[in-house]
Image (cartoon, rainbow, N blue to C red):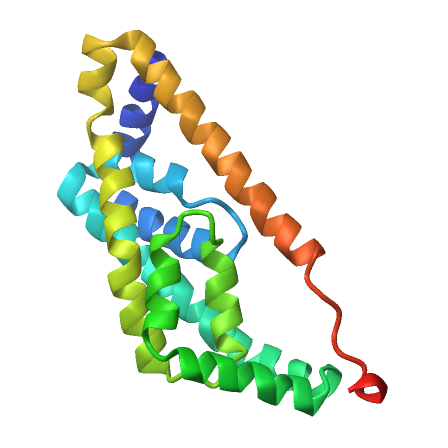
Amino acid sequence: MEAVLNDISTWIQSIGPWAYVFAPMLMAAVAILPIPAEIPAFLNGLMFGPWIGTLITWGGALVGAQISFELARRLGRPLAERFIPAKSLAKADRIVMGADWWGFLLPRFIPLIAFTALNWGAGLTPVPRWRFFWTTAVGIFPGALVFTAAGAGLPSLLERFPAATWVLAGSLALFGAYRLYVARSSRRNSPPAEDPATS
């Protein structure tokens, strides 16, 4: 583990200011793709410290979430209107709009709900952009702070408790794998579109 940290430090020093470009781009990509964001957030804390690292994690994830939302709205919504019965789509829209802002904010605080699924799913609904943006910004900040701060404290943890560091690294890996499994399972087990003939 110590060798890995040294390699990361050397790589950061070699790219210099470009690290402040690559790290937010990586977080944005993670927010768009079904990839757990905890590990990049952890690395941001390790590379940039708790405060700058949190801003990079939070800002990059927010940009990626908004990109996912816009792509789903511009491309996904027309597809949904084409393949999903209008009655079913209208019912889903009423449920989403009836949930108001808390229906988008509260799921952000539940770790088991896939971050990317919320981003793409919201774009398929008529939810206002501003509501999506501010609930995402508020909802993801605590997680960004916790995981980034954990990464920032890794060197001192490694120095004082080497065994605990391996336990933490293994736990993060298992948690990330579980989040990826949940995201894939939710897509695979999603109910089929309602048949107009049976509605």
